[in-house]
Length: 286
Image 1 (spheres, rainbow, N blue to C red):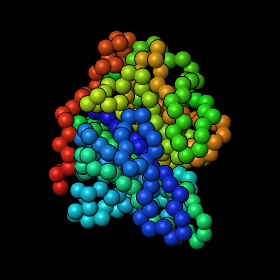
Image 2 (spheres, rainbow, N blue to C red):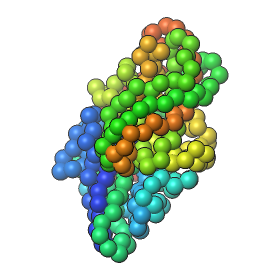
Image 3 (cartoon, rainbow, N blue to C red):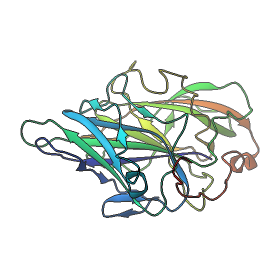
């Protein structure tokens, strides 16, 4: 069906070892003891660890721990998103995330003094995720902006996307997205009428570019359409942007969206991104 981006944050101290990052407050996913906990079937598609003194990072979840200590590799030895970012990609064999278990993201550093900001980013996919591009007119890339006055190290909350030029009326599928904003860590696209996955709304997104022209995954590999359809919207209800900044200051990020025009029929909103079967947890090796 689709993707969901989630984030962890924390301030590890000197020579921190397996420091437990805290899951950011999220309107769609539950937490226990500061960790996400999942009650539907998801798979881990990719992950990223960012920290100025990063050494390594790992997940901690009972089902996986019974086999070994699951590492996240490589880490980004940087307080901001580098160009290109180092990403732990599981696309060829995305493991199922265990149901009803705390999903921890832990970071290790070689910091000499004080504390520093660390980030953990995970991209989840549903059991029926597909990279397919819906049929429609040829994909085009459009420019847009959004305005924020956010707090630091928390999701900003969805803000309206303003397109540089008005779109032809009708239904569009977003099949790729990039957001450039110095000091921002990640973004998410919020679709007003996103098809629910087992009753849950998903916010797809990814890491931000710090400067125009920065290379960002998956642009560096399969191109901006690598992840298929992100979601659909009608021009009467455009999508919104959710931003994760590292500082609390007014910003207007640059947004690039790859769109496929599907037609004028509103029923097209409910097609694609199918509901899919219920998840089955995480049998080892599944």
